[in-house]
Image (cartoon, rainbow, N blue to C red; front, side, top):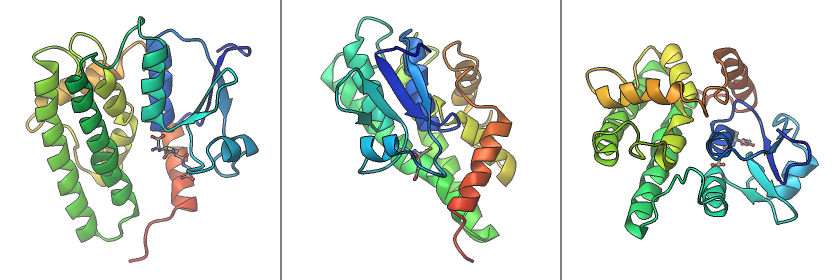
Length: 231
Ligand SMILES: N[C@@H](CCC(=O)N[C@@H](CS)C(=O)NCC(=O)O)C(=O)O
């Protein structure tokens, strides 16, 4: 992580959205400088570089305007470094299909993780767990379609959806443990379960995904600053 790198990433290590960008930077062997953000006391750099959402990650590329939003950042990186490990297909329909499912993963599937955290009461939580397991079954079908018998959503190599979903696995494990249920299992989602093990140990991701202690600390910070809804 060079200090004088042209690429700088503002982030916080346990953020799955930041991990996505790190994953792609590693896949493409791009050297970058990591700037650590404290979300409990947001820096001037974050507030001025992402004034709309005030969230990490934000990417800085030389003197160009800052780029927020993980999906936009990873696509930008794919466009400026097209020759090294491309993550999106080149055909417009394939790209559209990838965007559709990335949108589903962020706005439907992962949103339910947060909903589970902030929903009070056993009954409310059970209803959300059911929606999560239904979502994972839909993603199993999507995996089967995209991977076409190969190892990844991207086929033989890690692709855009592997990055998008892969970075949520740390949170999925944390959630499974705290809520005593399985998001991916041998019976409902056998292919995705195999994929989770494969992606989890991938060279470019294994040092990026935070350990359970770091995730737990981040979870506790969320519970403090964004507590569950009142019962
Ligand atoms: N849609 C955004 C989500 C980013 C996001 O939610 N980042 C969190 C950290 S995991 C954050 O910065 N939260 C600060 C806040 O909500 O104030 C992306 O894909 O980059």
